[in-house]
Structure formats: C-alpha cells, structure tokens
Amino acid sequence: MTTKVIVTGSRTMKTRKFQLIFISLYTILFIGRGLQFIGQKWMTYPVYSLLFTSGILAYREELQEQFSLILPKKKEFLKTISLYMLLIFLLTIASNLLSGSLKQSLGLPLQGQNDARIQVALLENPYLFLLVGCFVAPVVEELFFRRFFLGTFLARYSDRLGLVLTVFLFATLHMHSLAFSEWLTAISYFGGGFVISLIYLKRDKNIWYPITLHCCNNIIAFTITLLTINKWKPRSSRPLGFLLFSLSPHSSFCIQIFSLIKMRSS
Image (cartoon, rainbow, N blue to C red; front, side, top):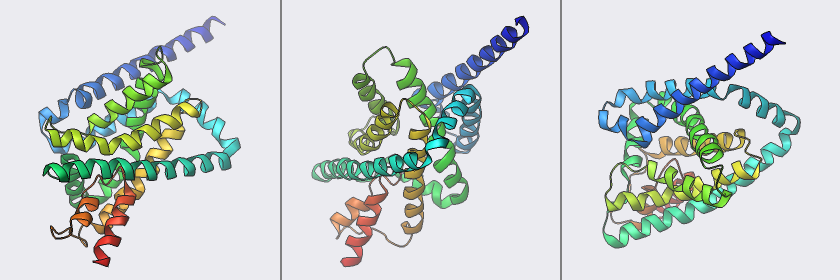
C-alpha cells in the first residue's frame, strides 16, 4: 500500500513538472512573443517539437483516459466532428468577410502577416510544415488554450466568460504586430476559435474533440492553400477574388474555394 502511494505521488510530481515546463515555455515563447523576439525562423520547428513532447507527457494519463471514452462511440464522435466542421465553415466565412471588408474599406493590406508567413513556409518546406501545422501545432495549441487556459486557469469563472477570454487570446496570438490591420486580421480567427472552444465545453471537456477538429481544419486548409498558391494569383482588377484569396488560409479553407470559383469565372 505504501509503495503504491509513493509511486502514485512520484507520477503526480513528474506530471506537474512537465505541465510547468509546457505552460511556461508556451507562455514565454508565444504569448510573451519570445520566439518572435529571438527572430530565428529555424527554431520554430524544434520549439513545437519540444512543446509537443512536454505537452503529451504532461497530460498523457488524461489523454489516454479520454481517448478510451471515445472508442466505444466512434460514430457519434465522427458525427460531432463533422457537424462542428460545418459550423466552423460558416462562422469562418462570416469572420473572414467582415475582416476583409473592413480592411478593403480602410485601404489596408488584405493579407495578414501570419497568412503571408504561412504561405512562405509552405513553399519552403511543404511536407515538414504540413506535419507540424496539421498535427503537432494543433495538439500543442489545444493543450494550452483549451486544456490549460480554458479548462484549468479559467475554471473558476463561468463557461461564457472563459470562452470569450480564450477566443480573444487565441485570435490575438495570430497577430504579429500592434498595427490596426493586424487587429482586423485577428477577427478572422474568432470564428474558428469560438467553435473549437465550444466543442470542448459541450463535450465534457474531452480534449480529443478540439484536437481532432483543429487538425481536420488545418489539414484541409493547408492542403488547399498549397495546391492553389502558385496556380491562382489574385489580381488587383479582381477585388472580390483577391479579398477571398488573401484571407487566412488555415482558419478558412472554404474561402480558398470561393476565391478559385470567382477568379475562374472571371
């Protein structure tokens, strides 16, 4: 009995250490813009790998337990993901069009800095970027934003307040400066951030729901972006096509489709 208590206590201590490492690293490097301040692009992939490893170790028991709850009801799980993907589709269209319309009316650049960096990274190393962007990064972000920030840090507050604060932080994280155009770009991420946070709360805070939803969204978005980035260049004479094409690729795959339809019909 004593031995079992000691082993359990040891595991708990290790788990807490990994949680502290994971939360501290993400807060310093991303929330605190430490990685952006360092300015070394090559560090992005190793940093995400480190965060992925520490995050999995920090929440491995919970991940295993919650995954076992999904296995008996796989059909229900897939149906839920499909329905929420549709919701992301619709809300992201609205948030992207709102962001783009405001930028266009104010004469601001339509493409945000984050979107531009994503396109450059996709062209430089598409396979590595797809691996990190579609699997590693979503797991890291969901463990931080949904599991820690919404599920633990804001647990004392109401779900509504927690959802609002989480979506706001998630959206502003994708800003790369305090320029007004970047604040408008952040609007593009509110739709996806809201739906991903909502599914976490509605599904008993099972982290596998937002992780899967986030991964599916990024897989479709990045793939379409990669396939279309060289074939369809937006022209200034096609304002609507350019507006749709230049919106956030990984928060709205449907925008890419609409841009292609519009440009081809022109």
